Image: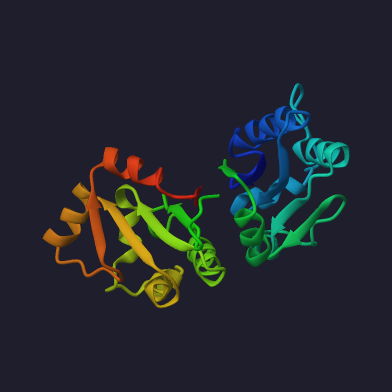
Length: 115
Length: 123
């Protein structure tokens, strides 16, 4: 089974990014292929670490990178969202992607899960 | 994916107009899907249907005006638009002209309708 995960929310304004990460982690190793995680709108901030991490919480950007390294999951940041919100293009495991690429991925997936 | 040669994509548009300073994110997603040959079912729960109101000019308030692009979708792909019955009635009673023909559904029927889509994305 192929799954595309879409994250709309920022790592600080919502807990949905953490929930999306937990889902992605749980799917790795199951008979499920996470084709990609697509970060759009304020989800584009998921690729940024910030300069401080609150005690007891994860740095989501690092956690996404570790998961992507481990399971070879592409971490795609909406190019329009990134260009509006980020001073520099996403890097270190994240990369920009256009909507056409995401539509192609979606067409090849069995499920799309949005957070 | 279902056997339909043109996959059916449901888009749930939750945001009322001007909640974000970026009007085009949802519209661009829909336009890209149309260009990639998805048929579209677009759901506007609650006040989000006000994104389709034609008669307004937000430029004086420096707010985004990209919502008019919703009207282009039927030229690109098979598109049906749904609003909650209460809000469709509100628009009609207020004489608000919408950029697309809208079908009214109760909330329960709207959720049932999502099940007929191959994929549903919340924007």
